[in-house]
Length: 483
Ligand code: ADQ
Image 1 (cartoon, rainbow, N blue to C red):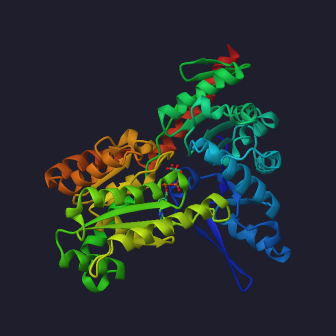
Image 2 (tube, helix red, strand yellow; image 1 turned 180 degrees about the vertical axis):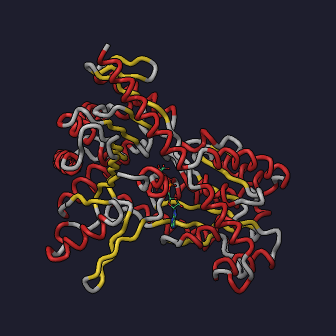
Image 3 (cartoon, protein in one colour; image 1 turned 90 degrees about the vertical axis):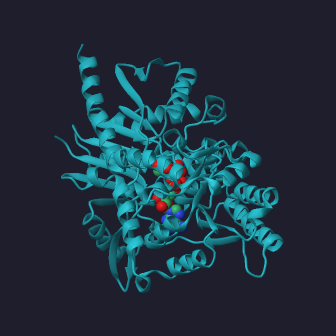
């Protein structure tokens, strides 16, 4: 059996350099956790960008960096600052990201971004080709690397290649507007297995393949020359145990062991047991609908004034892509909205919105999840949305209400939450009202079902299902060719 090579834009470790010493610290993100069972078992390698540009890397330090990465089964792709600009901030985040999230008007079609995207994808493919041998399995992740499967396939036809897209695949009418649409599809089709979070994204992709490339599609198989390519959905889960175990510890902590955040949240609850916390957690991204949510909150306070001084909206926004202009504008818009709404409604004893613009340590995330009566997660588009799953996993006493956008991939598996259209303020305000008044027995009934499902379809199962399907697809394809 060959080895496994995982490839993603960023490596699952972060480099820390101080006084000439280099340490690689494993990232705590969902992908890194999910791949643990695939990456740590036996012979595997993870290839990606380290986060440092070539200009950042002093030549004397390079061997030490490589050594620190190798200790974590990782190997770096070297990118210049200019390449990061055109490939990552450019084509990935100013062309594909907005287009695939239905923000057509934000999508920039610039030839130099496209050329850099191709060049950098080739660099990633070359890094794989330097290590890959016949019989190896290669798992390519996400929208930054859509050309890699075909680039590898061309040189190494006898490897298994899987591709997983973490963001939505848009409908044909949106996707067709991209000037390089055929090239992107052909790039992905170098794979044996192509995975999406939902059945809808899978159908959208198949429809584009059929209509733009004229390929034969039968059920979820694509015939391309003598190759058979399988397309399927694999809804990504979370490390359920990690979240529920952390929540149990949180609930059992003595007061003097609690974080300052936990103590303050508890103190508020004690002063007013009827007060409710609404929680909103996202990267600061226009696809997440944070500004709309703030407007909907204002609408709610006007429609249901009885909740003034009773409810608090905690907004946690993680800084993201802050050198892309749309993100800077959004930051300003949110700052202004929070200021305006707090200015309009605050009283001497009540501030309706608590706004944190930062990343938080895992401990504090758990504090927020466990202390919030209602999680209000209403992206305008989201490939999956893992925050919704994390919130439910931490509700170990089964109380709590999740208000979730229909436009999040996770809505498909979380029907027991209150699903809303984030553009409909009336419906959203009513859902908040319903959530505040939902009987505890009903909360428990809904969350029991959700928890059972999330515990079973965890991130490890997601990774294993994908790898198993890739293996059987390669065998099926081999049988098909030899017939
Ligand atoms: P994201 O857009 O980043 O992921 P999401 O799935 O919600 O969105 O994951 C965010 C992660 O960041 C969660 O694990 C959460 O705990 C963490 N996080 C959020 N706020 C934080 C904070 N302030 N501090 C620290 N950590 C924080 C992309 C796609 C999604 C898809 C995932 C996985 O856009 O649609 O679900 O990939 O495929």
